[in-house]
Length: 466
Image 1 (cartoon, helix red, strand yellow):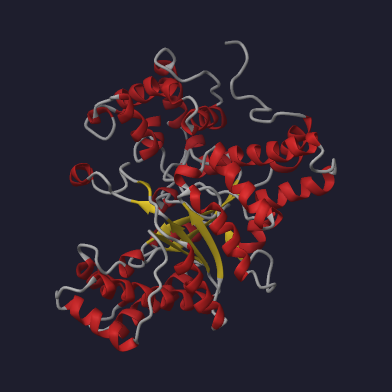
Image 2: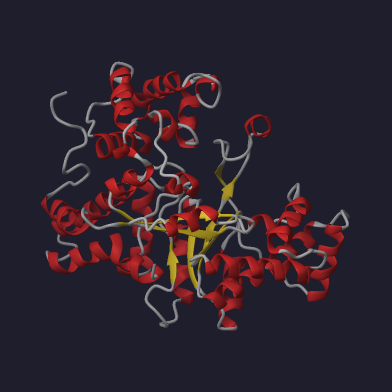
């Protein structure tokens, strides 16, 4: 093929889309306010030995595709060599057409390595060697990979028991980009999960509190929130099936927690009451510290019990859940708002059936106190592809103000994932460009261009105040 698949006007369908992207979106810095990058690798500024280590290991999107093609697990998460794993991925890529992996793969090869060849079995050997040679240089260290695509802020995700030592080292190094963290206390909430008491012991140790009562638990969590805040944290994140909200009495919660600590069984209703109570406590504490709270709702996790036993969680066996979301979420937000303790909030849904639920829910609690206080978050996980992002943008536009939207994030474990911001920006500009072409929006490049710049960067900059 003579023409490049990834070219300057990729996904941009007309001159209006091209102008919006190239003049108002392309050069905006990246604020990636939610991801799962390992801060130790940033702190140590590691150099990856080859592309498999930075691109395939840990990427359950790619793993699912390879398994679907019939590739043996040995060449996915098993003991095969890094090169053989890459060759297996290269064999898979042509079969991923119309899956976002096809676009992401070629965007990432282009933006990081200036490689515009299509990845397949024929090109794999050459691309593996070329990327290996580049990755083995200082120019491709982790920190330089971030600089290469104009990243200004990355916000990783840590458990309350984390020491944050790597974030502290990054801060001391005067790195020319901000690396923050988000507080992820789900293990302290999910009282029915296996190993809960063991985790609570670890939490108590990190907070230097012996956790024997519900008040001890709250004290420990509050102490860890203060510790995270002292280390520059301004966000939390929760990955829950749904928001919990059951009526409860304080005496009930004390009793439920004591029963659990004594290794006694608790009922499903007691589980829901406890989870409701601790989630409300945490949300009120976030408000006290002025944090942004994020709720990722609707994943049905660890569906394949056999493979969970073999490989553990976060290895590609999750899907979209069909949980009821609206009523409990409304009750939860209302309970906080009624006390004037609702902090800035971002809601993400995994089930596309909930798009309009989330897009309308945010309007119930945007009270005029600040711009876009409650946000409908970008397309997440299974929805962070062209169709999913377009539907999210349309739902938000139809039922809210897309002009106040804080834009895209990667939610990724890979240092090569940041072209997803470019992907989002191209999709946004094409959506607006098509409507200008049809006469559904005015040909007012100054105003619409400003809106594109705001969604790409300025709104997040103002919202998070990093």
